Length: 266
Image (cartoon, one colour):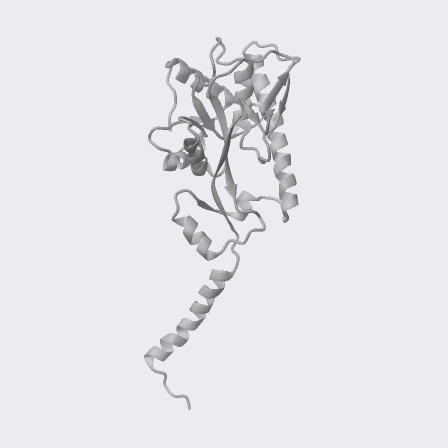
């Protein structure tokens, strides 16, 4: 015959599995990555002593201002992330907790992921060049002999595509009438691009806005679908311009430079 347990003892016994689960969760690695603002690079300048954009077959312009490609940095695919890291990052404004498969969507090893990211970057560079030259061709520029080489250090993925295209346009044509596409400002942005000049969404926009602000950008080009994410972390001093095409981005920057037209805003 079993003796009836006292209420405190019964509660303690019921709590033991919960405590055990919390202990396991506290020490077990979780399928997340911790991301934070990364470095920015002016695509109109050099990276590692080499020009980010190298054009041959046509003269290029001397440019003022900057077009800053922005990045995030995240814990590596093999780095363990525990419950404490998730809780710390959850409440930090300069960090974000992201599902690991959204940061590293393909591959199980660091080398596989690096190969995937490099492949995506190469595809993004090709699309950025195609889109920029197509835009300039539509504007009446002869681009038949133009060749473009792009490089951006160890950055992987497709999110610098829009900035690469804008950099090519600025170096070859500026605002189309002798001025700089940047208007001499420090402009940052993010977005994928395809060969037709369509701008696509990327991840980590709120962190990228913080990186842009840290490095002195006053204007940020953001894929239209991600305006709300950008607004969540942008200071009031930063102008957020939503874009969906390369042509729309060039028009917005040109109107901003000339203080004319209706520049869209998030």
